[in-house]
Image 1 (tube, one colour):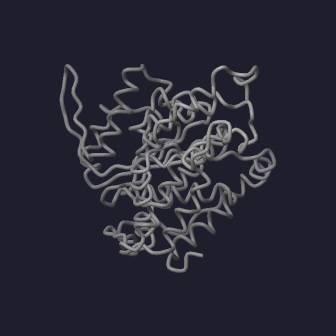
Image 2: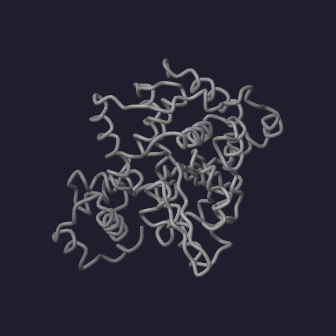
Image 3: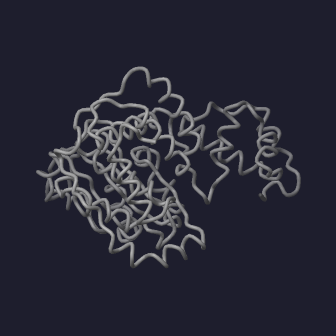
Length: 346
C-alpha cells in the first residue's frame, strides 16, 4: 500500500501505534487539510464529528506538532470574523485554522454572530476573500485558508441543518467516528504511553510539493467516487468532486509528488467509510437505492425497516432539495396516503 507515498506510510504507522487503527486515518486526514492551505483551490478542510472525549482534540494537536507553524494557526475555541483581522498577513501565505472545540465556539455566540462567522468562513474557503463590515469598520481578508474543526456528535445533530446549511458544510470533508466501549477502554489503558510518543520530524514548506496536477485518466474515477461520496454524505456531486480533487492534491503534495497517482485515489477510497453518520446510518443507503429507481416501499424492505416510509420520504426530500436526486414521482407520494398504523415509527 502507498508504494509511491513514503510519508503517508510513515505517518500512518505512527498514528496507528499512537491512536489505534480507527482513529489513525482521521489524524492523517487532518494532516492533509494542513498541507492543503499551501495549495491552489479546491482545498481540503475537515470537520471531525465524534462523541465527547473520543480523541478529536488529541489528533488535531498532533497535526499541529508534526507541521511547522508556518502551516497553521491555533484558533482555540472562541473567535469571530472580526478577530481574524489580526492574522490578515499570515492568511495571505496560506494557513490552516485549527479549532479544537467547535461546540463551545458555536454555543458561546449569539445567532447573528454565528451566522456571520459561518457565512464569512464559507466565503473565505470558497473565494479566498471575505469583506467584513459593521457600523465601525470595513476590511477585507484575503488568503488561502483551510480549517480543521472538531465538534461533538450531539452538537452536529443540532447545528447541521439549521446553522451549517449546505454552503458551509460543502466546504468540508465531514468525517464521523465513534469508539466502542471496548475501544475506549483500550485507549484509556494506553493513553499515558501514547502521550509520550512523538513524531521524530517536523514537516516544513520545503518538504511538500506546492504545485500538483491530476492526470486526465483519473477524471472518470473521480466522477464515480463523487457519486458515492454524494450519497454517503448527502452533499452535492459537484461539491464532492471538489472535495476529492482537494484530497488527492493534498495527499500527493504531502508526499512531494507533482502528479496525482493511484496511491492518492486509494487514500480517498479509504476515507469513504467515515462519511456515514453512525447516528443516521440509513440515509446514504436510502439515497443510493432511490437513485437506482427503487420506490419508498422497496427501499424500506431493502434496509429492513418496513414501517420507515415517512423517514425515507424526509431523507429523499432533503436529497432532492440539495440536488443529489431528481424530484420524486407522484406515485410514491400517493403510496404514503392513506398510511397504515405504525408508518410513522421506525
